[in-house]
Image (cartoon, rainbow, N blue to C red; front, side):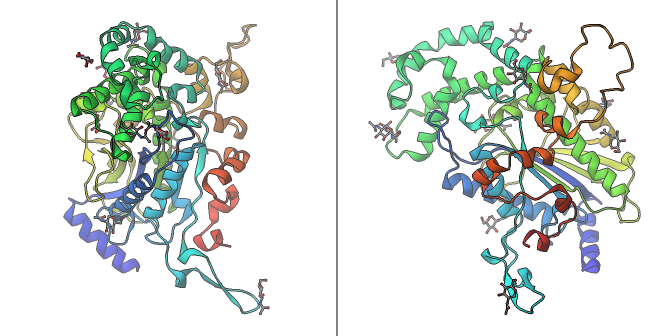
Length: 471
Ligand SMILES: *[C@@H]1O[C@H](CO)[C@@H](O)[C@H](O)[C@H]1NC(C)=O
Ligand SMILES: *[C@@H]1O[C@H](CO)[C@@H](O)[C@H](O)[C@H]1NC(C)=O
Ligand SMILES: *[C@@H]1O[C@H](CO)[C@@H](O)[C@H](O)[C@H]1NC(C)=O
Ligand SMILES: *[C@@H]1O[C@H](CO)[C@@H](O)[C@H](O)[C@H]1NC(C)=O
Ligand SMILES: *[C@@H]1O[C@H](CO)[C@@H](O)[C@H](O)[C@H]1NC(C)=O
Ligand SMILES: *[C@@H]1O[C@H](CO)[C@@H](O)[C@H](O)[C@H]1NC(C)=O
Ligand SMILES: *[C@@H]1O[C@H](CO)[C@@H](O)[C@H](O)[C@H]1NC(C)=O
Ligand SMILES: *[C@@H]1O[C@H](CO)[C@@H](O)[C@H](O)[C@H]1NC(C)=O
Ligand SMILES: *[C@@H]1O[C@H](CO)[C@@H](O)[C@H](O)[C@H]1NC(C)=O
Ligand SMILES: *[C@@H]1O[C@H](CO)[C@@H](O)[C@H](O)[C@H]1NC(C)=O
Ligand SMILES: *[C@@H]1O[C@H](CO)[C@@H](O)[C@H](O)[C@H]1NC(C)=O
């Protein structure tokens, strides 16, 4: 096993100019779902298929024993929970999508591998042919996001809501609202009474497009001129990008800032673990809403790489951050950070699992790869990594943010060391950036409801192999 794996790595390394992938972070949208305007939304069979296929694709790219760019040291068939961190908000569609994706990423291992002999000699087999149980942690921001027409509502961030709201009083908004009123009133016949006449305006551009898009996919008697459909998509894109990002007002993009913090933190943990000779923290996977994508596209200047990044990304699309090195890797000599690089990849939509994601340059640069340290430096210009940073950006001063509120009596002049560093378990989950299991346990009921999943304690997660999971 070790030998064939090494031989295989050697071959791959040759084939790919000596590249070895050390860790990966994926942020993915959900698959096809029912319309937002008719909550509760749910993942459709088609959507399940889409996320499952994406999971299979990434299995063939990063995980399986014949993967094209295997993650160094990752368990190929039986999931090792310490290597994987999966999260999604408390939302039907996103939780189900994460589950479907994982079924493709780590499919059932077959009954031979999941048979145990008990003390009394009898043997038991896990159900469902060795289906692998993988916990999905909850991120608290974005709860119920697929039921929300206005996604900023789900961030809980005061300044983000104010900023996003101010889009509705911008000149751009007013212009489009006025110039499209005829267009939208002409669409009334296609939305089957879901919206009344007054609601048929640019103000509801995304919700209207959403209904049309669902009908375009599912309704055999739906017959709308393609030009009008494309126009409604174009308008929905302008609307949603306007709500998700404003170059002179970063708070609007708070969900993208949190995501940036999560990505840097996770891949940095990959490096820390590797340096300590551990085989953990290799693959981070998060499901989230398109608004978070748009905020991140704006913040990271991907919009300079392609105008397509101004548009809402399709269902089941994913962005990928590959941490890789071109030096030799072995467990005794993990590469130094100076030898590590990052590549950003994007896959738009649900097309067949054979289509590869495309590399794009981040931060308005020319190269599609960049040194880890530069990546961290650029991400850090906007990433939110602690509760304190979140509270400051959001201007929230009560609840979990009370601790960081500017002191009225001016006793705040010190170094701040009393409250600045670290995140206590109680507050960590609230910002969504730091996925703490305390939050998972607190919201166990929701996970059970949504995903039918078992929640395991942190202690067990840390050490659990697959067989313990099935105990
Ligand atoms: C062996 O132990 C298991 C679990 O306690 C029990 O379900 C099973 O009936 C036992 N078998 C025998 C033959 O006693
Ligand atoms: C932040 O402030 C907004 C508006 O006051 C509030 O709705 C939200 O719950 C607050 N968030 C947190 C985490 O306290
Ligand atoms: C972007 O932010 C600036 C400064 O707050 C504001 O003047 C402008 O109207 C905003 N634009 C949009 C489209 O929201
Ligand atoms: C709306 O429909 C009317 C009547 O069919 C048509 O004359 C007009 O051009 C349409 N307007 C737009 C913006 O599509
Ligand atoms: C409108 O949609 C509902 C489902 O949301 C359906 O039951 C109803 O038949 C539709 N109306 C027409 C006229 O097709
Ligand atoms: C399907 O589309 C037709 C034509 O636009 C519409 O009348 C009908 O209500 C739609 N059905 C559903 C379930 O929305
Ligand atoms: C990476 O982790 C190390 C060790 O925990 C820490 O000292 C360092 O500040 C982290 N760097 C970043 C960019 O988070
Ligand atoms: C993804 O596809 C949608 C439409 O299918 C488009 O509007 C959007 O701009 C595309 N995004 C990227 C980054 O390619
Ligand atoms: C695509 O997914 C299907 C199952 O959904 C699988 O049989 C097939 O091998 C996959 N193809 C590739 C190229 O990953
Ligand atoms: C993105 O582009 C803007 C304007 O060109 C620049 O001010 C900003 O520093 C860039 N941000 C990053 C992270 O590259
Ligand atoms: C961003 O990346 C570029 C190119 O690698 C680098 O020159 C620059 O110093 C980085 N910016 C920061 C703030 O680290």
